[in-house]
Image 1 (tube, one colour):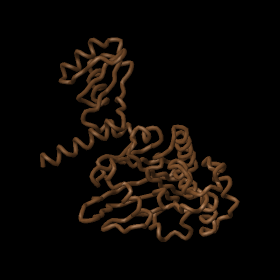
Image 2 (cartoon, rainbow, N blue to C red):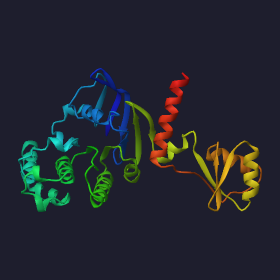
Image 3 (cartoon, rainbow, N blue to C red):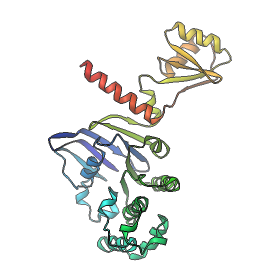
Image 4 (cartoon, one colour):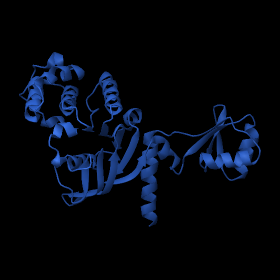
Length: 300
């Protein structure tokens, strides 16, 4: 499990992180989403003990990562391809990782095959494309079979097949009971891989939860309904001050959560064949959350 508790950090006189708390649980993929400059990479560097927090704490399996006896077994980290040694081959780089961490070098070829780089294993890293460097960095993070995985913008540079490969790989790692934390500004991709989302905006966590949980707590969320008595149901809901609009064979209701809509309809003796919150896109939810947060600050 990867945790941060009330982490704050200033860089160059700017508040980059402000009281950030999050948990990436074992067996799940947690997506850490926000625009560039929101503080995602800074928080990951604090978790990896590359920079200190000004206040608060980060832990991996309940302890600071710096306390890990074998770091690569505790947390597999990939933050940036720019730190890969340019004049070393991909194979030599993974051998170096194995040798410094006490792992058998027999792991190198299977890992290169897993990430699709065995055909380029003897080429110098400086000749690799961005997508190939991403794959190699992910390989280095995984070669120790770590209990926890933390990847910063791992989709960058991957072609469509590479994105699908990574999505499958991360789900497999989570299915093995590992905690996976990945950051991205590509919200549509996180929707497809993450079980839980943490939204970071201007250094603060503005929302956290599953997509369904986030949607249910969004001010402008809608509820989809269908009914054999749809006309009567819509008339009833409008009389209660809710707004509706047609959607397929049913209607979308705004102004109340699904539980409240059900209470109104069933309380009037009418029936529903379908009642469910409309799942917004992650981008919709992020924009709604940050707009709501900004309005609250202005009102204060």
